Length: 136
Image (cartoon, rainbow, N blue to C red):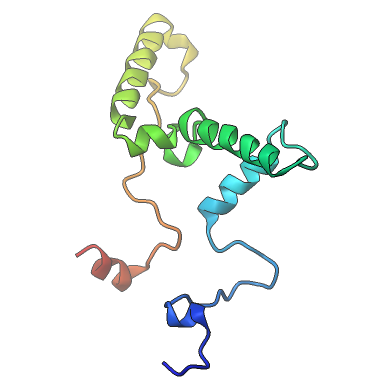
């Protein structure tokens, strides 16, 4: 590449084509950031770098190990990452089955079941032909 090309381009980083000053390129990051900002304990200002670091350490532990995410079947990211999600889902199914057996009148449409785990997650899902080539 010519010398006048900037470092990002030389490294294969391409410019975002989203609207200026709108950081919505990664919905996963945006979702996490929104959750961070809307936590009741999120301060108006941090007193120092150490305060911000301590806050984020607590937040990310909670976000990954305790917070149940609707996009992954109400599991924690840690459960999914470490392969515990199916076992957690099976235990939830047992509890729901017992609840249904004890009080079927409380469930009007059908017996309850825990949400399914997604098999694939996309930021930008490929369409038609593109999807066929990415799964081969």
